[in-house]
Length: 291
Image (cartoon, rainbow, N blue to C red; front, side, top):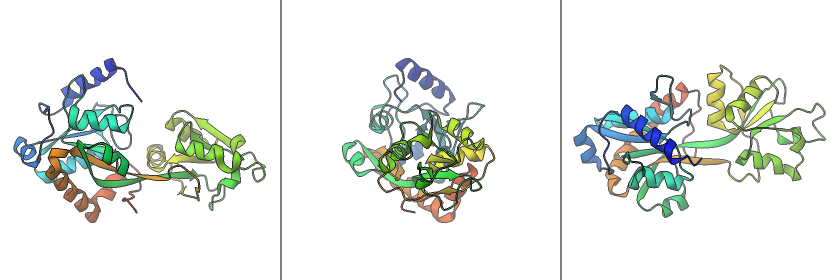
């Protein structure tokens, strides 16, 4: 995911032009944010359905809407900045929370879609990872008329798969590793690999594959964009490296009060049902952390 510095510079300039106010060089506590009337929110570029640029060059997506609601509840305007990811999430926290990009552009007051992981939080001491708001899961989309709704991976083994049906998965992902090693490789002949998520969804839509395994929100969102509604199941995945993970937000260590205030907004969104509504707008099932 590393990007050339020249490309990073291009995006920094582009989104600097699109931003609503002069960007601060340092993250700010709550009182400074409210005094400025602007909350600087950073999310990932090209992370549909959570954050992406629409055809008019405007930031859209679930995280973008969450950022706008947090700003609204704090009585300020949202300045949304979308940035390319670094090589690791640690790089993203460093660049967007406390150091800033080497090419300029400043840090954010709040950074969204950060992994909520104990070891990750411990080693990133300059940032505070707070307010977990969504649980990502691995799931399988199926064509119920082509494969049994009580889906089991054994259906793709050589013994049980006389019709040579295939399951699709993105190459070099957690789901791919699980399928390739399932029962000592018993499914290998019936796995269809794709390099880009949309290619897998297109194969599934054409019924070239009868099932599609991957990140639930990514599959749901792309099927929704194509106008397809099919069951997504979460069968037994014993042995998978990671079946689910939680995303949260990051603030600077000196901006804890801002993090607490944003947390109150997240709780309000969950309790009122507005959070689920934001996810539903993009065709995604809202799964709260631990849900």
